[in-house]
Amino acid sequence: MYLNQFDHYVKKELDIIYYGRYVDDFILIHKNKEYLNSLILHMKNYLQKKLMVELHPKKIYLQHFSKGVQFLGAIIKPYRIYISSRTKGNFYQAIHKWNKIINKNNNLSEEEKQMFLSSVNSYLGIMKHYKTSNLRRKIIFEKTDRRFWEYFEVCK
Image 1 (cartoon, rainbow, N blue to C red):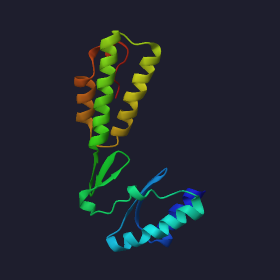
Image 2: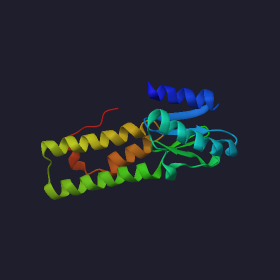
Image 3: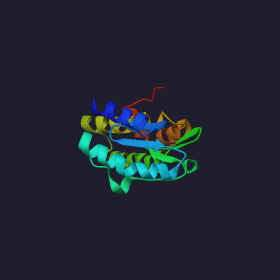
Image 4: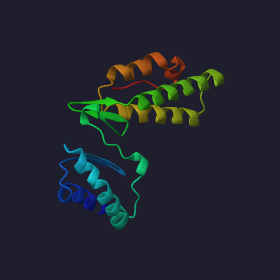
């Protein structure tokens, strides 16, 4: 209920047409930077009074849309969405960690198999929303230790 009120507030009362929200993250896009700057105090007050949440002062970014907007592990640009370097790097690190585990133990416990599968599926689930098929293929087939294929198979 409260989040629907916030959506209404942003779109109708603040007159923001281009707006996105997922849980407690949101982006506002407007052609006038000064207008967006003027909204910060209004939104801070609204969020405190109506939803009892704080607007994090270090997580407010105002920049030109052509530079892209970081949102939910991606960089959103006009007509294209890219996976963020951070998300990509975290996936590489996760695979590297699992490769070390299988090199050390030479096999996986049932719990480790489930944890590996959950980790990989989480990254693949995020990345499937972007043009990352080559990247996903590279990480899975070139960077992941072959011993994992004793336990898992890749399905489309």
